[in-house]
Length: 277
Ligand SMILES: C[S@@+](CC[C@H](N)C(=O)[O-])C[C@H]1O[C@@H](n2cnc3c(N)ncnc32)[C@H](O)[C@@H]1O
Image 1 (cartoon, rainbow, N blue to C red):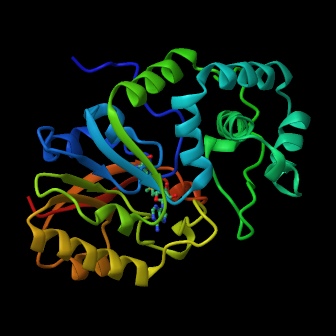
Image 2 (cartoon, rainbow, N blue to C red; image 1 turned 90 degrees about the vertical axis):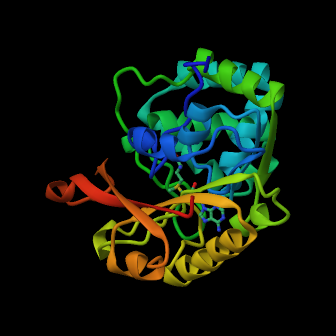
């Protein structure tokens, strides 16, 4: 029986919670290793709860959160309660500014993880967003009672990481696709191909993910297919993606998205699931 407390610790752009009913039936939960190279908030992983997995993200602040939750939960909870007690707009901007000077480099990994969780729970729309210099730049969210310390979920995630064989990596997704067992299963959820200039969210990391990265990803999918390794990939439903993956199977799914700043463009949009299974 899956543990229902296991769920994303952080709200993440592109979170897959609402698409789980489309994605989960396509993922083989009897695979030898479940591989998620763009883990983000981890909605699919936490729902599947595989015993053996490789998870990865380029965002080192995010991966640091997962490692600290696994290794230093008590100290992390202590710091989160301090943030909760101090929470205000003024305090938020003070904590946000810790990456504007050398201060962040002097902080411990536990302090860094507590900062990211605090900012994620209290910032506008709960979105992790950095500018081109890698500085967190979401404004304060003004929630009445932000759930800054969700102790039950933090404990469940910590236990899951500790009691299973979960390899938590921080790097480029391509490195996680090397030397995989043939019976592995890969779920790829890359930053999406933008469908319009106003929806091009690239703020997960300083570098962004452009069309040339989408082409490179397609080549990686070809390599997996040649090796007989099964994958499913999420992406946006647009001409470039349909053209790139014309030799693959594509399923259209509907998602509610609210990242677009133009209010009338929020709402249901088509996304695709590309697969070779
Ligand atoms: C669409 S999000 C994944 C959302 C996730 N499925 C969820 O449910 O929250 C894409 C993720 O890819 C990461 N990313 C961007 N470029 C990357 C790269 N070259 N290698 C690995 N991860 C990368 C971003 O930091 C971001 O967390």
